[in-house]
Length: 214
Ligand SMILES: Nc1ncnc2c1ncn2[C@@H]1O[C@H](COP(=O)(O)OP(=O)(O)OP(=O)(O)O)[C@@H](O)[C@H]1O
Ligand SMILES: Nc1ccn([C@@H]2O[C@H](COP(=O)(O)O)[C@@H](O)[C@H]2O)c(=O)n1
Image (cartoon, rainbow, N blue to C red; front, side):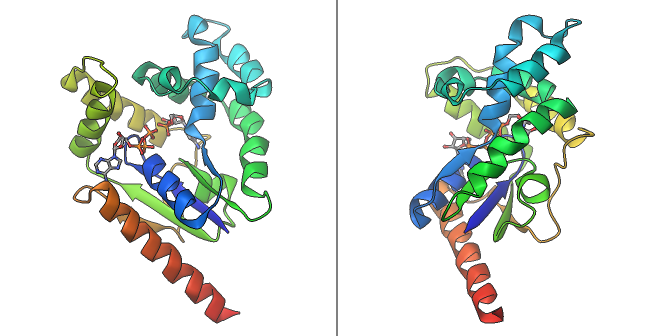
């Protein structure tokens, strides 16, 4: 079973995907980490003349070991850098096979990101599109960063998330939209447990309907 979980920054898709992976005993890939790792690899060339070729080379040579440093990868700065390399077509092409092969492993997988249901796994068994209002997403990210002892400027963080969302939505190479066959799940008013229960209900219902159609 392949489950695609897409949505904007700090919508809670990673947390949901982890919960679904535990519930269905499936492997999980947070595809944002791939773009974050590429972005960090070329941070010193940000907005420079060789940023794009360096990002393409970094994506082509990405080693899974680069996904280990979660503190660095989940920083706000890494998120900004990720969204800057994510608009580079050859970067997306270089990361496609890694994501696709993860999804096609025996038994399936849960992948979360921006374009899983539209580009990486249009054939996914179940597609969820997670959303939450901007204020809720900013607050969730702020608390996430504060739990790590970081001082957070909520005003700056709000606008940083808005800017990243805009860059993502305008990404000509992206596919960052809700797939026609994706189930929309708004988690603005749901806590983590309630959101997971709702997601499991969608997956179970969708898979039961598919089984009934066979
Ligand atoms: N429904 C929820 N209610 C409250 N907090 C939540 C909810 N879902 C997730 N969170 C918290 O919000 C923060 C961001 O969640 P998560 O990392 O899953 O979002 P994301 O969409 O994967 O973010 P990004 O796309 O930026 O990686 C985490 O600290 C998580 O614990
Ligand atoms: N499938 C994806 C996943 C992510 N991106 C880009 O990476 C940025 C960081 O992603 P997070 O999920 O960790 O927030 C994101 O803003 C996108 O720009 C992508 O392009 N495709």
